[in-house]
Length: 266
Image (tube, rainbow, N blue to C red; front, side, top):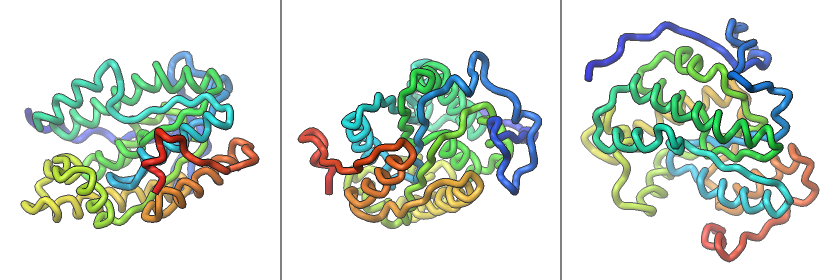
């Protein structure tokens, strides 16, 4: 499959006031069909970070904690769309997809989940906990050579989170964590499609370093709350709970995981 031509640049920030370094976009006043922001009474909380940063573990623990505080929680992540999620998995397994095709398929997956899961949950007053949001998709696209503003433009109509956390972890630490989980490091997590190195470890380090640099850029541009993800699960979780409790008006941040999740508490 031949590579798609470079796409024109577009910008947008989903209707909120632009960051100081961003010019106002003609898309800023647009929104998705049937979505009125004043109707979204819930809270959208996102945890971003590279592979091995501990996002998924924290999402599980935070879900249980928030439910114990009386909140209804909807979790979301990438490639979970009923429309196209399995198709993305199949293409990734075969390694037969170009960077633009992959970026657009991920955007389709994201918007399908947005329409069928995220917006209905927010309209119902739920807390949506996102294990990655469109920011990861922008990062992956940019490090593969897709124009940064074009990648941002793909998600101009998406609602911005109430809180976005970035778990910052050095690639060397991330590799150790990923290797402990499985001795087979993912082809895509190691950036092997980018032909950075013939050595698996070196390819992973280079790719995750590129990802981390782009995340740092996004963290500044979009005002992420940045924590080191290299501490213990307990300490990182405590930092997250304190900040979320402040946003949601939760008085107590005390939490002890249930027997089902205690194995994550380390």
